Length: 68
Image (cartoon, rainbow, N blue to C red):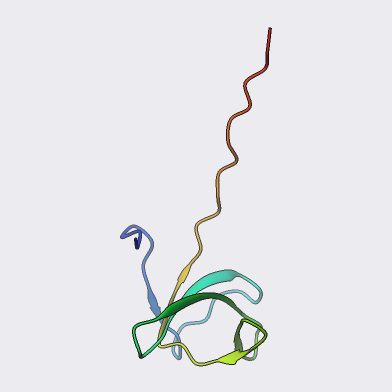
């Protein structure tokens, strides 16, 4: 489910910092994880052409409870 606090951007007009993890949205409605290399969008071992993208939200590590 998309986080509405995390906006999407036009993949041709706005690029993230190189090698930032992003969720890529495609014209056919599909989406995949990928990165902007600084020259091309990259996902699953090849260059891709998304229409929109959003920053991937970093995962929060689980809390480790110390045993007493």
